[in-house]
Length: 292
Image (tube, rainbow, N blue to C red; front, side, top):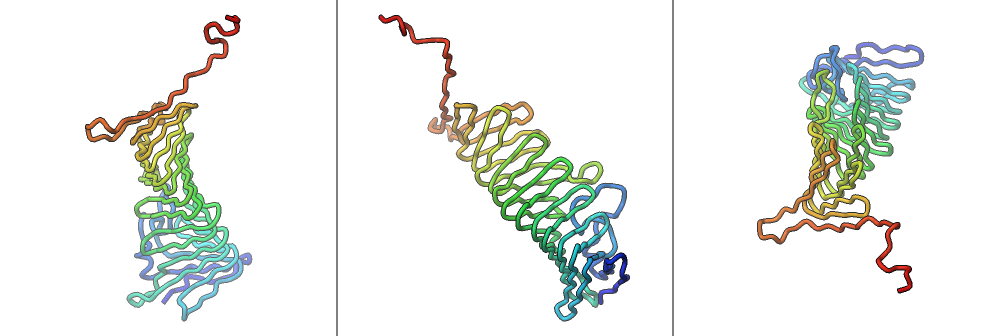
């Protein structure tokens, strides 16, 4: 059964500390310490899941669900999920009750001591350690990066992967990468926080430098080197000039772009370009205005 650690009224807030039995093992991960923790309930801290709400907690035993309404919060370690309503679905396993899914509805905010993700609705699959956010204002932020999306935003906690779908935009410092779908891959930094390693883009990928605007079908941004590689129907635009090719390598540190064609050696694949000469209005064609 689910053992209720304590259930009491404190300043109008109903607090239920759920000692999850078998779920403690399923949710266990990195120990709670001084290091920064990434987003997510699975890796952050140990012990049970604490649920709070202003308007009480409803326990539906037959449906095996707990519903918290009104400024609802689920906390574990330094990670938490805030929403207007939280639903915790549990199941019986080996004589214990195990929470396997959390559904957050309305003004959803997932946060740790370093990262924040927001949306209208979130479904947190505890088994897979993945959360999917939908609705408006989808955003995931780390201390150095921001990832937004139109359709959905996923975070795979164990793999440290964030996936933005639909008009996805990733910004890191002064760099912006766009695409239909962007997959950001992180790795643990020295302090344990997420550190961006690379971003993969699929569909209508584009990137802007101080001088160029580069578009392609697919792209990869290496955060360690600052180099972005785009392939498929690539176009580089600089002012009124445009170069077309199959593959572009853009160094975001230097602003230098290099375009190549993926030929097979037969000379048929070539880089094409339209170069518009700069106009000098101080010069006139020879003989102009002389009346000759």
